[in-house]
Length: 120
Image 1 (cartoon, rainbow, N blue to C red):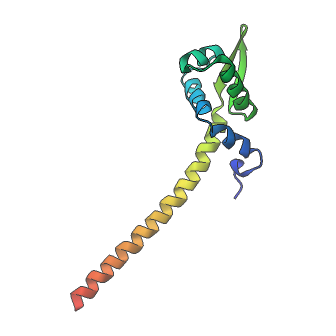
Image 2 (image 1 turned 90 degrees about the horizontal axis):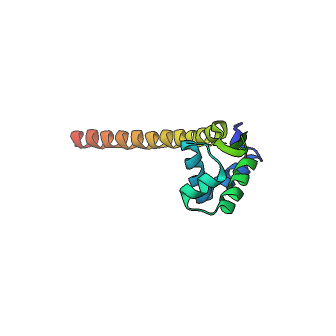
Image 3 (image 1 turned 120 degrees about the vertical axis):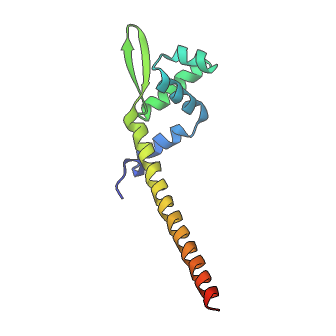
């Protein structure tokens, strides 16, 4: 299994996403790319805290920064988010297959039980 989120560098991405404030910042930036001050005002978090969280999100490659006039505008890098989504999707597919197998076995047992009761 060769998946980008199973590499050493993936630990940083998942670690960064473990923090609720950083996830709130991501949701806010997904709605509208912006600077740290605007994000801080919208989330009622100090600008210093938002700047720290943004730096960690940048280092993990989840957020990109561009200069617009004198503003540092942050935006979500959808490719990194897709990697997380793809990994979770793989896990979900595996569970869906396992649950479908459990359902099939339960249905087969029920049919076998009915058949056995019909002969008795």
